[in-house]
Image (cartoon, rainbow, N blue to C red; front, side, top):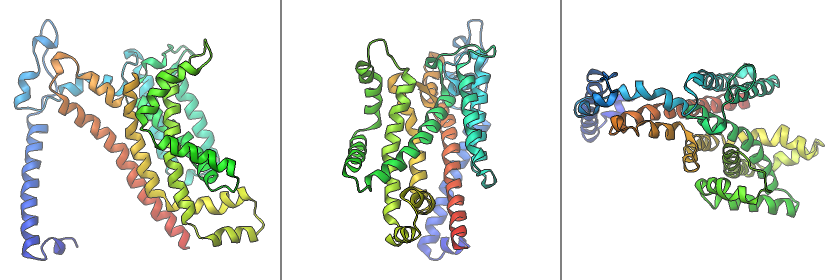
Length: 351
């Protein structure tokens, strides 16, 4: 039914034709560059890749060889090469958890146990040191596995923190309200990169002598605090959108404060703010790339480092397209799922 809207006037028809021509030419160029002229392997000479440099292919072809040669470093960073199967299993476990958690038939208390067991397994796989697995320090973690760890743990901890802070900002107790307001305003008043620098440089100076928390843990705490402050404001908006009659009805039923929020207020408030919540989740997932400033090599940082070799310099376009596709896949999945969830909840509410 979209065709009549594309040709309802001569201006609309002309615009549609011009855009279709531009789109066709662009698609043909991309197909020629990315498929027909794509080079996925570069022959090596006696002295390796530099003996047969890939740079001469740059002028006319898409050198996908940088992806086939460096994809393991992009996905797993400095994780030991022979142990990267463990990081691959971690990535698959995270994807499996996302898929299972998105299915309505698994929305049961047992799902929390599944998450707990899966996170324990992820920790054992990444660290090792048990069951014959080689110990791998956190300084060698990187790539997509590190990005998923930072984003998933960050959201999993920040979300309940945000709910408590949002409720605290609406509390009738001045002391609790002031603490929550101070936390939100202070964290939202500085960029995430500042918090990461503070966690990496200043926080160790405040710790007792001999106590030194891992860099990854400090970065994770900074991310959690940052996410929590922003999510708290989104949730508070949902709480304020509910009519007072909901609170009065719960009070008339004799429900306690926590029962009112758990059974009546929060389910409705969270449903109202699904779009901005998911928007923040997507933004936070991409913001994990800022950990590069404190020396952690997430997916984007590992990809930048992968093209640092002289033989692959100048092939940033191919590398960033590969990384961008991974980010897009996760973000698009979150967006589409949130739309389906919102429709499902609206239909359930109308019944």
